[in-house]
Amino acid sequence: MRCNSCGEYIYKGKKFNARKEHSGEAYMSISIFRFYIRCTRCSAEITFKTDPKNADYTAERGASRNFEPWREQQKEEEEDKLARLAEEEENAMTKLENKTTNTKREMEIMDALDDIRTRNARNERIGVEGAVRHLESETQRSAIETEEDRLNRQDAEIAKTVFDKTIKTTITPTPAKSSIASFKKPKAKKPKQNGVALGIVLKKTV
Image (cartoon, rainbow, N blue to C red; front, top):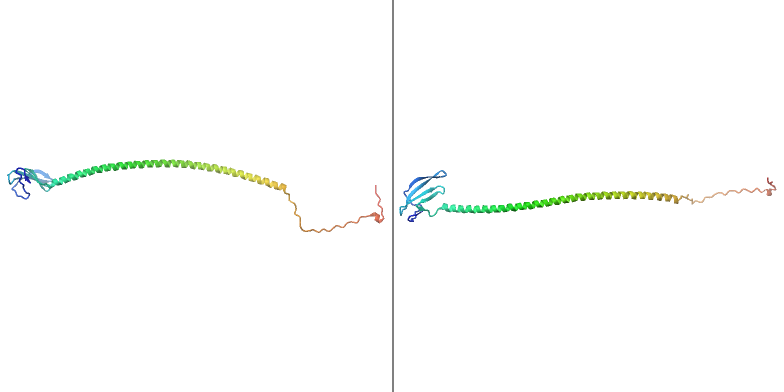
């Protein structure tokens, strides 16, 4: 440490006849003590206390330390803390941006799903109506074809009946002639009874 009165440097390993007293302070149930010394050059009173937190001493009055490791540590901790806070803030902003992006993406996905559902419902409705119309047209076509088949069948039956009657009236069956020659015995002619030739005159009856 360095004396504030004359600027004399007092090294850490220098021995003093110091007066000690209890400061009435404690750190985690560890008592903090105060020491009184005098400068080796100007005999100014210097007081310092124990620092159980950093396992060192802290200058209280009459002198100041040239280097305090815990101050650098505190500075580093403060810098780390500031950096951590800045990082957390940046992370919070990043998190918020990511959350906003995710929310926007979810909304877009929901809109797309709604469009798909609407399109599917419309297609399904059109498909059902189209199927009904197709079924009705097929039924009508089947009915028309059935009626046409019935009429065609009736026409065919009528034509067949007329054709059969025409054939019966125009064509008469003739017995088939035998190709085998038949020989008939000629009948014997009876001789004429000529009375003149016999000398008999027949009287005519009145």
